[in-house]
Image: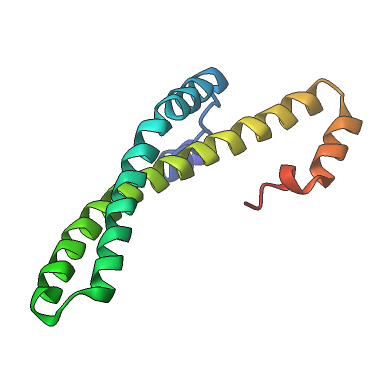
Length: 129
């Protein structure tokens, strides 16, 4: 009887979320398919910023403020888009790590201990990136 009381008071331990490798692979594939649009837009904006930076170095004092205001507006857009891009890359990097860990768990469960030990010694599989 006391076990029920404690378990209802503390609640059940949260079950780890099941890894859905196919869903993660779909998300990564979709991201990589669309990444070209993000990078093209970012490249175009960085080129504009580079031109403004060149103009800044030769600008007369009268147009210096205009140049800096234009750079500020462009940097606002760049920072926002780059933040979104970086977050997408980070999320998909985590997905790749989850898939790799799930693979090691499955290989271990299948009795492939030599392969698992080999991969666990590989720096890339340590996933310290």
